[in-house]
Amino acid sequence: MIRTLLIASALIAPSAALAQTLPTAPYLPLEMAEKAAKAALQACSTKGNAVTVAIVARDGATKTVLKADGSGPHTVSSATGKAFAAASLGRDTGEIAEFVASKPANEGLRTMDDRLVVQAGGLPIKIGEALVGGIGVGGAPSGAIDTECAREGLNAIGAK
Image 1: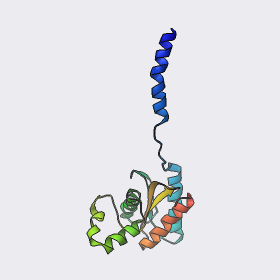
Image 2 (image 1 turned 90 degrees about the vertical axis):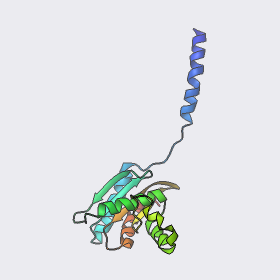
Image 3 (image 1 turned 180 degrees about the horizontal axis):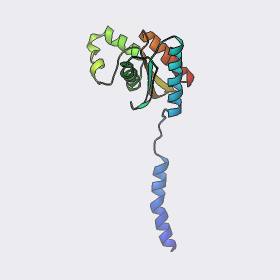
Image 4 (image 1 turned 90 degrees about the horizontal axis):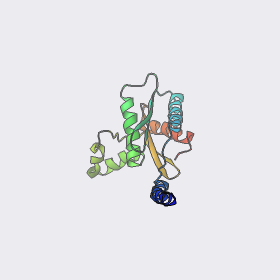
């Protein structure tokens, strides 16, 4: 009996040790994504702009999309593509657009993935130093306004 217990515990102990060493990764909870999206939508609405706001996780999966009444039909794909680009590349999409425009050899960044929208209005979502997703806004009269609204979304959740 004791021998059986010793053998069983010897077999179980390694699996318990392995389970304790699994990596953990930061992620963007849905509640935070919704809060950021609502804040960004409200910021644009206050300025009189009907936009769509999209939030994607670090892996590019859509977490939430809010489409204002009266926003254009193209704004969903625009906001989602900007959020995807910001999460995928980890950078402000307006900065990426300027980089591509200044160096024609990098034009391939625009077309390397059909889901990327390389225009101003997308920002990476960083909690601390961890990149956890992207926010994209589409539909304001300029990319600068889209970006301002996205920034308000980040501010609402304490993200960079």
